[in-house]
Length: 272
Ligand SMILES: [Zn+2]
Image 1 (cartoon, protein in one colour):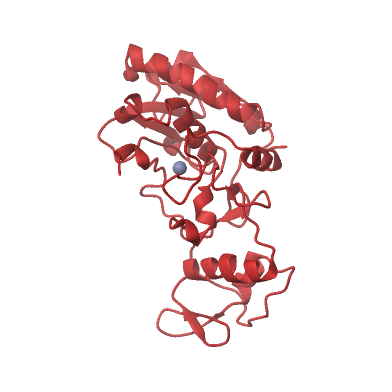
Image 2 (cartoon, rainbow, N blue to C red; image 1 turned 120 degrees about the horizontal axis):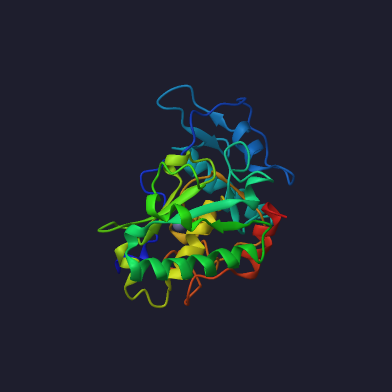
């Protein structure tokens, strides 16, 4: 596929969980059972890497397989599949505090060059406006730091810089990143023809990550792009058209990357 078909942002970042734990007493999945409860109740063999046993005698190799099993088998059997915009979740939501969410400051590096920087300023204004219009968050552009808009610039929450020759069009970060990791890197390919996407659309997606949202397609193994189980559903419906869903992962969004009605519901749920 074309290079811009992978708006990857998770490259090199392991989102896999650490060691498993929990009581070794498997329960029948109940209507009220959450993923966390199900995971804690799963039986893990004490040998050969600790395979996870479900349905009495069926072994699963990994936590990822267990998560896929839960989402696809347990929840669907119960008719309570909870899919929709998802927040990065590691024992708690990975999101901005009530004060920080209203002061999400950024700079745009002068190293973009005059033409591309102007495109970035406009696209960021439009992309931030899309999230600000629906969630209680506020991004602020501090252009006074553009001349030294680096990973160590302490005057902003995150920096936006150009890169080239990368496998992604752009990549972002999650709210639990340290200052040095809080960058939105935009590849030179982002300034070419991205049709049907636009630079603004790409940034709407990347800003979703900066707010704590995971890829929507990790909610379903049917997407073919399942990533891991470290997320929490924010709405009740899986949204194949989500701004956070890759179209090439059995997505249904054929135009630009835009916030859907469900995206807006999810964003408001996390940042009311
Ligand atoms: Zn992404």
